[in-house]
Length: 149
Image 1 (cartoon, helix red, strand yellow):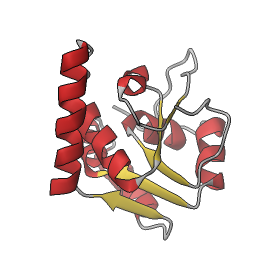
Image 2: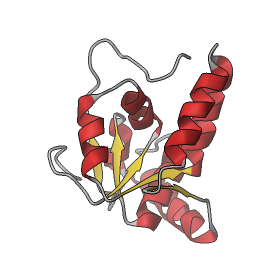
Image 3: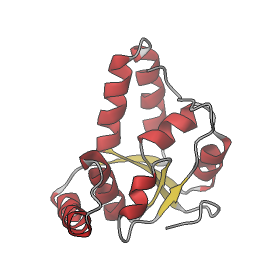
């Protein structure tokens, strides 16, 4: 796991990292700016869509996400059979260790492993995934989000 101070050339963003980026979090912005590529697992898109649908600014949030995804350095990581194999290994290892994490987090970790990226997150659960390179950031006390939910 990365210390949270080193930039990585290939980053993946989880839902918390994207929302903090939209909120103007300087640390996430600096990591994204220093990276060569940014990947967003398709599971993150589903979580964001759900949050947008529950909020009052659905269209505004969708436009911002669409614009972000259109950047030439941003790619979406699809769920493929190879990602599913990573998921299975993560699921089994966490169950054996007695330290399960939410299913969506396992899919996000699996997609990140598939890309060989470093995951940026505010969720400490990812630190339990063996072999996952991640930067776990601490949220500010305000708990700001980049979109209205």
